Image (cartoon, rainbow over all chains, first blue to last red; front, side, top):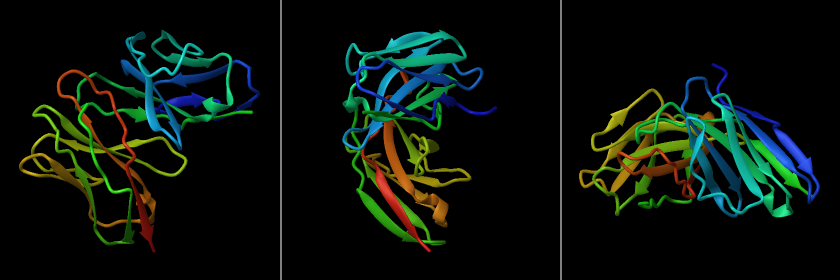
Length: 115
Length: 111
């Protein structure tokens, strides 16, 4: 398996523009997670899905952020409108199951810069 | 969620063992101890996890104190490739595998 795939790897946009980040989880994994990493706040869990259904979105910073998972092999994280403080590396991860012993597999991340 | 405390940074020499400590004094009986690491410019990767007994795998060993209030990740022979941020994370037993990352330990490996 190719692992978790994220696109684009780098995104530079201007304040106010819509940004869409994409993720393809490992085939057969039922759980998908979105994280954000900044110098100030470290790695934060934004939202996670089970079988395409959002389970916990308590980490989503505000209404400008939305995430969808239309099918088992694709998820998007959208920011509209984007702001400079959204600049961060966004990681997607997937896991086979929900158990506390289960491993999460992370993608390479998307580095977002909002000017 | 129970919290963990790790040193901000540590240094090691190549091919020497490294012991990375983690304190988790408020751990509950069903919390699993997981370690992940993040190499420069990469996403985190799983290293090892355990509940009560010491664990070994091809990457590392995990030594868990008898009272479970602390644990130590052991890299038996550090290589330059092991330079990374190492995160010790507690996962609430039985209900989820949500990862709550702390600040981790930045490990530098000197040649």
